[in-house]
Amino acid sequence: MSDLTGPEKRAFERVLAMGGGYVLGFSNRTFSEFVMDSTGRDIYDARYDYGSGSKANRLRGFWREEPIHIVAKLMGELLDHAVQTGVRQETDPQLAACRRIVDRLRHSAPVPDVTALTPDGDEKDLGALTRQVREAIDKNQPEAGLDRLHTFTVKFVRALCAEHGIAVTRDKPLHSLFGEYVKRLKAKGCIDSDMTERILKSSISVFEAFNDVRNNQSFAHDNPVLNYDESLLIFSNVTSTLGFVRAIEGKTKGRGRATAAQPQAEDEIPF
Image 1: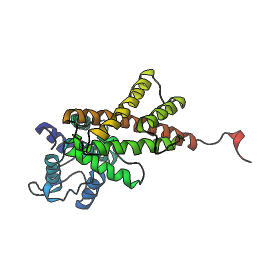
Image 2: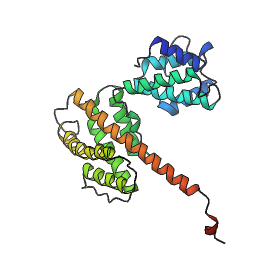
Image 3: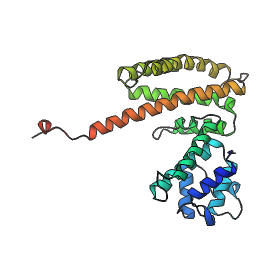
Image 4: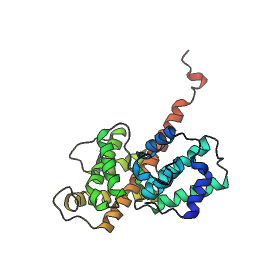
């Protein structure tokens, strides 16, 4: 469950116009669709029954039942929706206070960068792995998800390498692939500081050690499983790296789209 305080709950209630049982301008149907799209949860499931069962009370039930990172994700997107629909202005001090609450929730989660564990495109394998890894996080059992996290990371890094024209073979280990990927980022000018490059290069040895943890200290085989605290450290470190990679890839693709959208210079017009 989340650890929202009383004042924090009241702040959300004011910004999201939860008086009278409502949440913003949602109908029952649109509220259900919004929560499902954001979190994959059915807000009308019985476990969110609270008070009268109104939309506002169901959101309160959601705060009570769901882990911190899930609550943070939904609340962040509800705040975005409030701005997009004109219910709140981005300059509203009350909205800013709620955004700070969302930031606190995100950083209070056992694995702060859990949003990095999201599949790209329609790849079913990555989608299934994401659900399994997040289930381990939701239950606060990182040791139970180490092997799935490793498999997710391998598939994720292989897909990145393929996008960048790096040869991918089944016998090339995770750390080797990631090392080639970091070199490619550097060559393309995607890394601005020496420190960032050093941190990414340190992740190469982290991923090499992750191979051993997966094989000898996870449920991938009949092993004694690594303890909770070290498993949590591994989760946090790996997902932090993947989160940074997602951010840098997003910026690179954004620049590519912007360049492609620029009109041709007059001397390049084909007539």
